[in-house]
Length: 431
Image 1 (cartoon, one colour):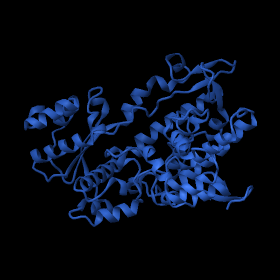
Image 2 (cartoon, rainbow, N blue to C red; image 1 turned 60 degrees about the vertical axis):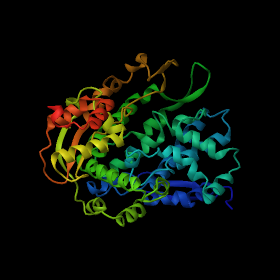
Image 3 (cartoon, rainbow, N blue to C red; image 1 turned 135 degrees about the vertical axis):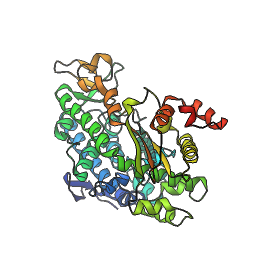
Image 4 (cartoon, rainbow, N blue to C red; image 1 turned 180 degrees about the horizontal axis):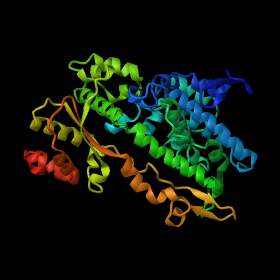
């Protein structure tokens, strides 16, 4: 049993010393949390950036550390007055557990159509070891309240620290990912951001996480760092090739009933790949293991795709898979040898945050009125477009007509389905 006042210190390459109280350490020692040691933060990014082998485990500890810092500063300023101690404990635990439901290999499996990792968190809370560690805090409805914080649906004044425009998760992963990848793009002024975090009362009288005007430049830098990381790291062409291959591999295993989604959710990177390697015809797993990645046949900027076009490639994995199969058939290459990729994250630079002005007025960075206070908000759509690329990957050179692929991007999901059902050639009908 944990004793009051006991704590452990964990050495971390990003934050130096992370202090964890004994009760929270029991959460860390539970089997579901220990699984995160074996789930890489950036999936297949290590195939491009060899240092990117850091895990969800250390990221979660870092988020917990930042929660301690943020709550400590808010408390010193008296901004937590009136907020129950249980809310502070829940916020720290939510920061620690925000990725407890995460799949192996980063966000690839959510792109493949599996439920979001936030939805899976509560399921992991029911594991006997983790449930016992959480119940020891003596907080009523602790698992459901943690689930609300993690999913962003809590009414807590501190919700914004866990899920929001300025949540601690973003600050932590951008800082850690950039350092471990060895790139300068994710530089974030962490101290300025945390010192500028404040609680603001909105029009309804409810307190919520906001920012002081003096932190606007640091917030703008964070958003630009996020854009740079997507453009240069997260959506790097070789990483996206590996991601597309992995999605195809896992979707095929699920469709053949050789792999259950529930089992995937409890797997680590390596345990999942061990299962997949033993499946008949799992050539993709061997190719991934040996870094024999599909090559780019087409790679065009999103600015060349009609506005709003091709979104089904990012949001409808079933349709995308059917189009890949039809294109492979028409081009005379084996099924699965050609993959489409057009990632999207329209909320990449979204901001919904109250701003405390130097004169005490409250503005909102999520409205037209407040957009002038944060210059980057005026070009978020252009930056999202700049980060995206429409790509076709294939195992071997094949004559994929770029005009035909761009024409596919002009059509809606309904139009594409109709063409598939009609049996017409996707390539010829695009000319």
